[in-house]
Length: 275
Image 1 (cartoon, rainbow, N blue to C red):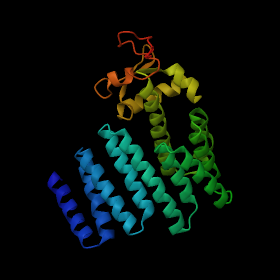
Image 2 (image 1 turned 120 degrees about the vertical axis):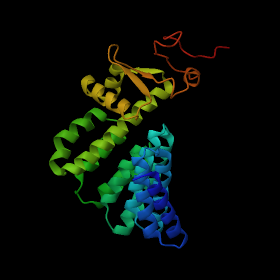
Image 3 (image 1 turned 135 degrees about the vertical axis):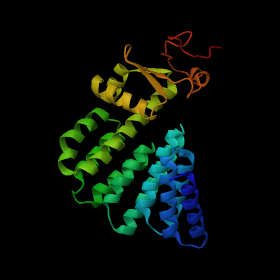
């Protein structure tokens, strides 16, 4: 399968979009996106997934549209476009609200809450968690509890809860999806930490997340290898240091916060404007 196949699928998708056949446009844009992803043309894959979302919304397949936006966000991550990932997840969360109304399925509020957390919109996440509590009548209790923990950044508690409770009530594929969400949320939390500091230590992450250092190291290495965190991990010093090729060190050093990286001229300096 060459890139010509991807282009052909995209062409057919556009033709169906122009003629108002949104179901087929959705199907062909998804097929084109998967094709581009296999060729590691991630920007093209992301754009195709986003087009699939548009037509999924038009034909009222809201849940499928939401999932397309998560895939688009994952493709943007491969390009180092982390903000686009968060925006796509926020859009996907709003689509899940429509899915709950269209399908008369309050469980979609839980899906929307997870997407809101992935997108960094904790206020909407808490609103959707409350909506799920009010409408699911005790069902999805475990997932609601997990979403609440994650919305409050209790990663250690959430990690243990997945192993102790979630694995008992969900099947293998569902547990795999939840673990994927957890890893993405954890990576987002670490990226936020690296926006204010040039480096963070495993010890500081253990303190802020409530997770064991060994567990954090495992997740950090996985996130770095998968491109979820634009940094490199020094296993000797147990320090996660900003990848200078992917983050602007000068921009980071202008922030009013501690600079911890040993790679900087003054690792302990505070960037303060004293008048």
